[in-house]
Length: 627
Image (cartoon, rainbow, N blue to C red):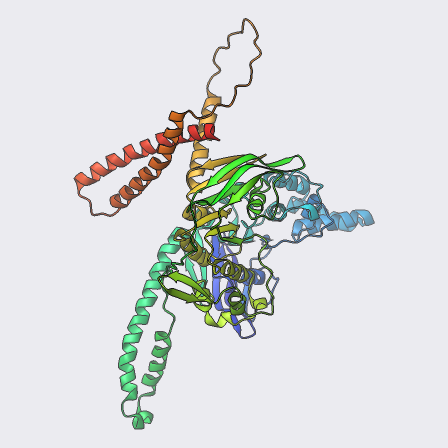
């Protein structure tokens, strides 16, 4: 194996806060490493150290000589006045530096320097750099190469920065939250690009499908130490749980031994000086081990939301456009009680605009939204909340509510609520300016949830949150007794939380889909394959028309009474069939069935899948007419 990078004994602290200590690991050619840790424990700091952006207290960082390294920071910055294409020559990479030096030498007429640089240009394949830049930018849906950086959205800026890194064809690619601000189409493009190109990779990301499909190694920083797992995200989850179980068992054994040792230590205190020193030292070591924090699974937080009536909100004939760009066009929708809707679509199709119209922050061009009297919104926006940085964490939450109701007379204090969302008692008394970006987003989330809303509207809640926090938020939303709308590019998160999707396709075309994101992706793939099959069929003989007739556009028909009734029945029946299918899958994987039961249930699940497919296709046909 070819070693690209070796890290030995790396320690980093800020004042009294030790982020990590004595980290030792290596990166070898072909490794695709995902780095996982809680917010505030040093993920971005570690990447900045590896790329020379930050110093460290002790240890060694050694790269292979002449290794080409590409780095994508979490929040890339470029001079606002330069163009997209100029930004590609503004990068901190060897090829861009050589091109810049060559241009300077050409202008000055330094022939010996020019000759030297031509050799380097040949070696680095720099002559077609601009062409490669345009090619990658186009693949990332950036086609206006002259557009100024200051006019780009956050998603477009991230794609330009990503193009910059990929153009240089690095041997080792270091990515900090590469999927933040990218839409689903771009995330899936990047996923495929990394899977099918020979790139060694180290990245920080909260996108668990991305980790699972791209990475072959997971590194986890936990309690200042590093743990390595040779496998993808699914393998990591399995092995991490085994590690936690073993640690918990060790702590339990240490506690039992400690009780015995404590009795020994307390006996004949006057003779303490004569006790064996090794045994006294062993006692204190055992005490230290027994006092380790025991890992527990996610605690279920059953917060009682405010009462919500049967009328939630109704969108009537909503239309919205910006110049020639249509966002909504005569959109109608009745939101149901306890509905959990996911909103997906490419950047710029109007997802956040729709949310802002719902929240009254923007007005539609025409139409209206009627909101039920009992609805109490909790709104988490992409822009976040501006905190007083000199305020303590606990005070920021207490200013909103001192406690939250769990129902049945039980209440949770603001401090206990913060602990559930991973703010330790020590962290709660920190000033907000000391928090990491991810910790501030987590605090913002707490300020939204502690208000006891009954309708949560979450616009990109997964950006900058670590995986542990995402798991807690997912569990909270799954048991939340209210309504939820989530706008997110996190496919794993959407699959766990929502029961159906509103897909923004662009140009005011919206699709209401009954299922989660993976269901939609499979359905979309099936439709695309069918279209390809139809296109690949040989052309049938075309008979000439005897008399040309001007065909009129057919009038859009509505559902008949019988079809409407069938549509409503299908909406009730399909979830029941899905529930039966899930139950059968659980029984089949339980290992408790007899051979006869296995055959019977296997046959039933096959029939059930066919029935669900048939009825879902019929539902889709009727829903197209109903729109």
